[in-house]
Length: 392
Image 1: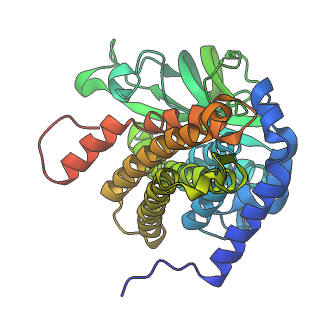
Image 2: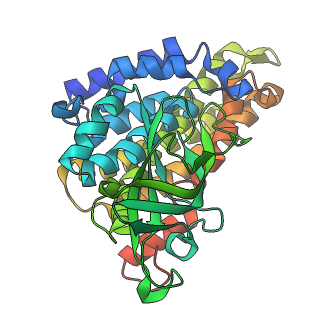
Image 3: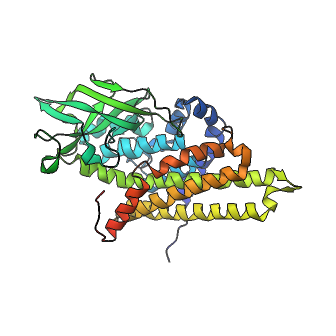
């Protein structure tokens, strides 16, 4: 029989992160969120807990855990706040993981110890202003070799952790082919590591976002940006394939985050239903409220099972592309639906930013967009079922 019970070690991690989220994050995150400030103090405490090193070997300063452990942490953090959760997800899954998966020993030795401790953050330079989901078709950033240096020109959009005071490196996808236009058979995309502060790299101002307001998201531009030839990450021309693997894993992590948000909505509504009275009774007395919360709990439960399955496959080394897309789609839908219902249960208070459900509502929408839109997830699932159609 297949079981979904956490091991003692996993439960201890889950409980530790849950306590941290309730006692350290919850009391202060609303102020960071409303002011659009990056929570450096919280990030430092997360580093002390070892969260940034969860899936990495101890040889690099990691905790010796696995991807499932990372997803457990993301789930528990997102029950309280998604800005903190996405900071961890992007730093580990998108920033440090490609270095661990594809980097040389010299690159791993240089960058991973600081990243695993949370002393520094890495970013993932994928999306471009004109590209969106069409990554290869929209790729305009170019890199060419000049002796022993890469010269990079172009721009990236919506890059998480790109401009914090502790950002150390951005792994950038760029067209490295030799033809005049980056299209067709001539397309060759590579990943190149650009250290923060490199001349020619300009970090744009923080976006004014609807949600995830306490996370760092910026545009990057490259103009004659020179980095050493050895900053190539992985094989030349294999950058897109490498990052597709990174995105598949990232979808599982985002699914865990989304499921955490969906469960956080249940947590808040249960508390509110017991505290708030209307027409002489607690809200929880009324069947209309009971049914709405029951539906929310069912969505959160199914979402959690979806990412459990996908993350377990990642950890076991089994194929997981379809399960990652299913988890991302299912969990994003659960987050959006639960955030909407939670706001409705809270009534006028649900429209006030001082209440967590207002943050949840603002944060939920991007989960249907980032790490591959819900439409892209359906394309992936259909393709895995053997149906012809556009490739993603």
